[in-house]
Amino acid sequence: MKVSDFDYELPEALIAQQPAEKRTASRLLHLDAGTGEMRDLAFTDLPALVDQRDAVVINDTRVMKARLFGTKESGGKIELFVERIAAEREALAMLRAGHPPKLGGKLRVGDGVEVEILGREGELFRVRFGEPVAALLRRCGSVPLPPYIRHAPGPVDTERYQTVYADRAGAVAAPTAGLHFDEALLKQMEARGATISKLTLHVGAGTFQPIRAEQVEEHRMHKEHYEIPQPTLAAIARRRVLAVGTTTLRALETSAVNGARQGETSLYIYPGYKFQVVERLLTNFHLPKSSLLLLVAAFAGTENIRRAYAHAIEKRYRFFSYGDAMLIERAL
Image 1 (cartoon, one colour):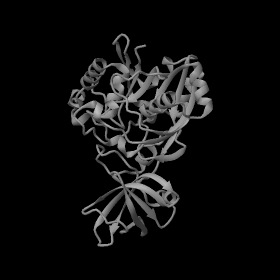
Image 2 (tube, one colour):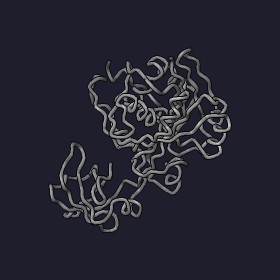
Image 3 (spheres, one colour):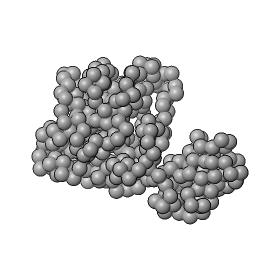
Image 4 (cartoon, one colour):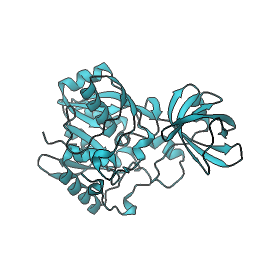
């Protein structure tokens, strides 16, 4: 398969630059992959689509303020994007600078905290900070909005680029399907008989990276850490599984493949993948030629996704992180 087969043209005006006024005010496109039927709904219709058969699984990762700004020893400006905290004072990070710093080089970020370059690990730098990384990010970091959101992060983004159930810090991007929920809607789903279970997958910066290979099969995914509590595994063993977001789906399918409740996942899902766990997927609309678009094509069928995306563009749905949502019923 060619990556170019998963391209589409999107009017720039449909890329959501701000969240909806209320979390639950988004639209919901309901796609039944078995029949190909599509329905235009409101996100507030979601509780009526679940019942006692459903185990709804959410990702409780919390987005870190992962972007830091500073200078090199020479005075040149740099941007440091913490991808993962590796130890109390160490991290793996992307570094944007006019000229890459040398091994052992020093930077200053935030309010003057020293950073030493320890080495390279693939596209990332391993760096050591002069104080605990988590505390520095809380004090000096900024919200790591996706590159297609053009405004600088502000107070609205600090609140809304985070799910209401975010708990465990470690992500550098939000699990965006969860941004549509508020506490009241979650309670409505439980009142319908559905269970709400949690897992954690810390979303990495690789989620924004385009597929550079020409052939779908040649792409390699970045690694992300996941943990699935035993009660969640028990819930999904008894019920129909509705995964809130592609990150939740990848964690559940990874565990089904390797039998591990926690670890690293680089599971790459594209058309032809045989799903073992997830039967229903709530997700946003994804970028052209992205691994996430390939995942939903695998879940719903490539032709169904082409039709659904064309329909969403025609009906002026809002796309990407702050955009509208889809509920996909997998063809079993």
